[in-house]
Amino acid sequence: MNHKPCPCQSHKSYAECCQPFHQHTATPLTAEQLMRSRYSAYTLINIDYIVETTLPSQQKHLDKPAMQQWAESTKWCGLEVIAHNPKFAKNRATVEFKAYFETEQGMAEHHELSLFVYKEGKWFFVDPNV
Ligand SMILES: [Zn+2]
Image (tube, rainbow, N blue to C red):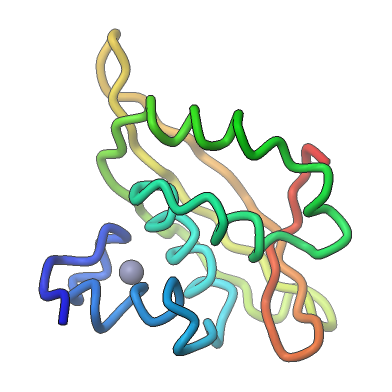
C-alpha cells in the first residue's frame, strides 16, 4: 500500500485515489477522477497512462517522446479543480482546472477547460491539439 498523499491533492492517499486507476484495478467513474488521475500520471511520468486515457482515435497522433520530455522537465506544484460539469452534453463532461508548476521565473499556472467523452464504459480526454 502506498500511503503517500496523492499527487492530485485530493487529500486522500495515493493508494486510495489515483493508484488503482494507474494500475488498472479500477476505472475512473467521473471525468473529474480521470482528469485528476491524468495529472497524477504526469507528475509520476506515466506517459502510457496519459496516452491510453486520450480518445482512442487521437492516440496515434500523440508525440510520446515530447510528452515524456515535458513531464520530466516540469516541476509540478499542485492541482486545483475549479469546476466539473458532468452533464455538459450527452456522454460529454467538462472539467475546468488549474495546474501549478515551477519555472525559472517562478511559479506558473496552466488554466484549462478540458472536454471528456464517455465511450464504451470509460471516460476519455479529448486533446484539443490533435
Ligand atoms: Zn489522486
